[in-house]
Image 1 (spheres, rainbow, N blue to C red):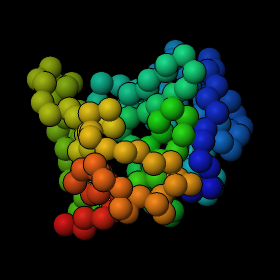
Image 2 (image 1 turned 90 degrees about the vertical axis):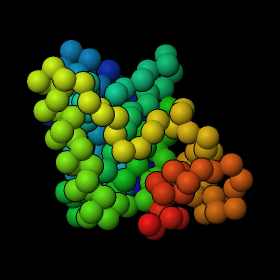
Image 3 (image 1 turned 60 degrees about the vertical axis):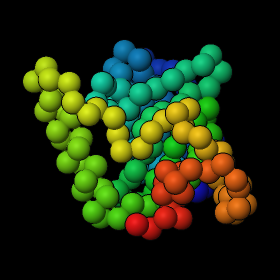
Length: 161
């Protein structure tokens, strides 16, 4: 990842020019936008809805959940924004991406039909995991860390099954 951190800016509307390393958040339009953290320069839009991303602002920093998987970009980057920091996650296989897209379609259809279903993304929020989150610049040291759950290993690509 080229960017290890994003500076957040609350804006009324999205500016015409997106600066690298900046996460623009529009509460009025319930969306955020930034340039891909790999450095490829593509715009990444994260809408805030009951079936899409959730944004947490703690007064100092912003977190987005679920992770951002840029599967339609040539870079196929995958990362989490937690407290303005970028946490790199493993790439997903085509089957994993398709399974999540199908789950997302079912969740949206059920939500808009007024029928609650499994609206949780495949991953669980880091606050609910018994894991140690490591920022991008610390990824090489993660292999022998105790307390990392199977889910975290799966997210970072250690368990290929």
